[in-house]
Image 1 (cartoon, rainbow, N blue to C red):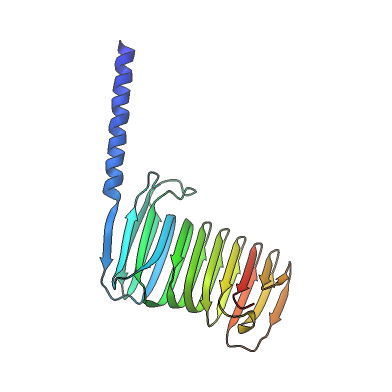
Image 2: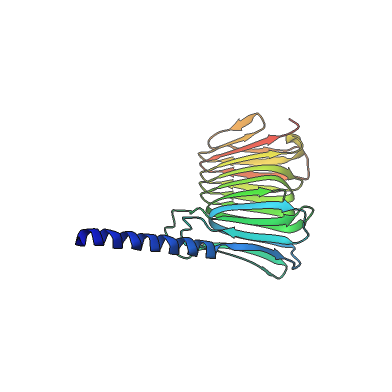
Length: 244
């Protein structure tokens, strides 16, 4: 009898904890926030979960958080200071090796052009669409960043052990440093639209149909105003062009 009573008490406790967790999860979800402040640049530091940056037909910027079942202690904030929109996705508690399953959405006006767009991506995945800016900076440590439809003058890409898939347009200069991950870039225009400085240690760089293996150091001069400085330590950098 005591064992049966104990089982019922345990089941009641489990149900109570589950209900409490569900209520907490629902309470942690944020409604869509529309930001009407003047924003010139975007600065995102995203630790874990999945980030979606999408365009919409409103003039305001939108922000929304959907907490998952395994939020893993991540907290997300969005605010504007000195015309810079900051998105902070930091981890307060939990295992740093687990990114959790939270989803964060940032909606930007379709025709909005930013002075700068910075994404520092930790142990997370990011999907970014149709960003227009003068300076694009992506710093990815472990996770995966997919950025498509971007247009920028200058770009700065730093990759640790993750993966970056980028598709868009760069009209000015670009710096790319790949430590041990994979950087795939597909650009509009032709390979001859840019000059290249290539440097590899144990990694590999491929530009169009030409590959540069270990310990390569080469300059490719096409007499352009666009300079690409590419360095690959132990990973791989791949550049493709639509008009090749």
